[in-house]
Image (cartoon, rainbow, N blue to C red; front, side):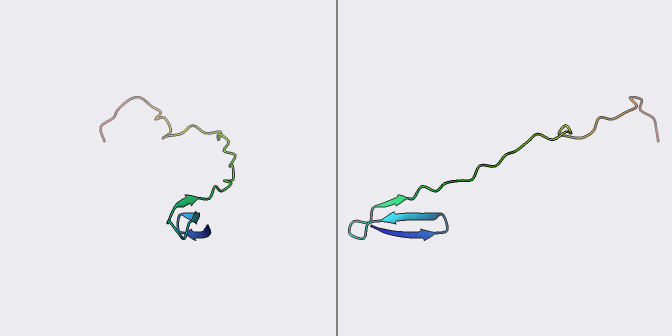
Length: 52
């Protein structure tokens, strides 16, 4: 078995038969907290339409 790496990450491959297995990588966990503002556009104020 030989360990190689390409653009997708490291993998092990057998030089005799060509069998390929991905190497498991530890992925970092990110803490995502909710913000104070609501998503989307702000509400319109007024309610009356006027001709411009």
